[in-house]
Image (cartoon, rainbow, N blue to C red):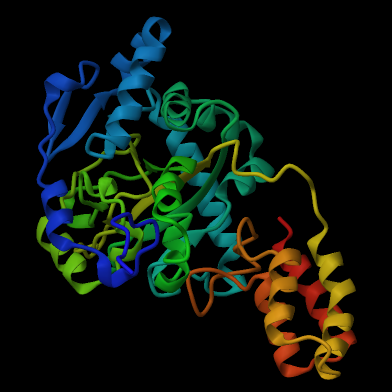
Length: 388
């Protein structure tokens, strides 16, 4: 039988570095982006004060341009001087320092794409700042330029999250990667999603960062590969040596100043750079906003369902009334197979990119023949870990 010429599911072996390279060789023309002030190394640069004036009368046109820039353009843009008053950034940084001090006694925070403890990390800085200093939270996040880019990419009713990252002197670069959602899944898991969904996933979130310190090149600002978000199979490719080598040879860095904002598609190949200085910390508040549509219709108490079905699954398997294949189908229909959202302070990605899921727990318990009481206790422990 002849194989059809369409490909909706592919393996990592079917990625093509030559196609990727041709995509990344595109050049950004300033004439195509009338609201941008300049391009640097293929990245679009916007002037914050000018943009703040323009959005009062040309908001839709600007959002149209920015959406195109992030999807069909270079995939990355910078807003210079996004905070007219740098005191707003400094006051937020002061709250971050208070949080760092308070969390210093609780252990080392895990990380996604760097060794645990290599960088300073505050998970859920959004909520922690609001709890500690509501006034600082309000003046910082009530930024019309931050809202502008979020709505341009995600539409209305988006939801914001944020995590602080501090790269210390001598801190090493991350490996190049793509981000949430599929960037946090292993290759074999990504390959189970059709290419259309892999491509679509980048439209569900927006990555951003606010520079809380000046970031000259020697401090290692984020390495970026413009246009790489356009490669449809990129979530299957970024771990492969050919793509890593290409990134290493062609990625660019832009110096940032305190108060600048950087935004990029989560599908853009990127990585935090090495801090080559001996005495300069690089601090950024990493922003991640999610589309309103990334939610189910009903609220389901999945831990309760897990506790109800586990004794029955365990008994039926032991009595050979069902096969493990049948049990697996019940697991898929009942428990959460996705690790997020969670509380990354108490439920960190130790041993991988993502924490344990409910499906993982059910499989482990059945494989190891846990008593019902042990399973119930572990479900309760996981539920408590995931609470914000």
